[in-house]
Length: 147
Image (cartoon, rainbow, N blue to C red; front, side, top):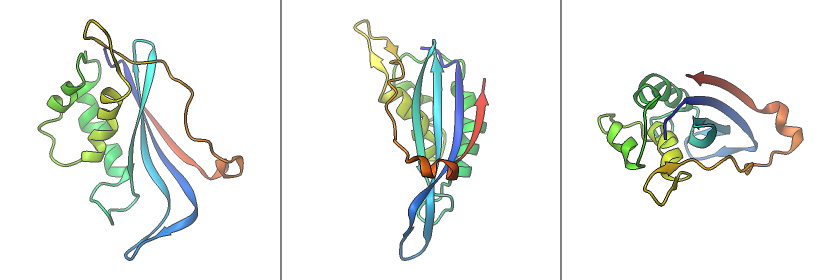
């Protein structure tokens, strides 16, 4: 399968109540949602990290930057025939496990292996999170399309 286009969405989804730990408080989920288009269908991935580096060194901003500037240029317009290929392509990237995982999961999980050994991306199923309408106006989404 050839990776035709990738969309990145940096989201902020507020929690109903803040998450408090011994060292910090989080007000919401800050993730980077990845949508990969291949041969007319799309697959989704996610890099779920915090807004600030209190738990791990990666943040939603650093994930977005690494995916956009480093990882996506390595795979865009490339033919991927096996899930392990992305691991090989990304092998020289140090750290940034969440940034890498957001792209790798699209290939390793939802792609289907055909009887001839090739990969296909199943059509979108429409499954996903259900969000109470009263919270929709609180969700922030920044969309970046890379062609």
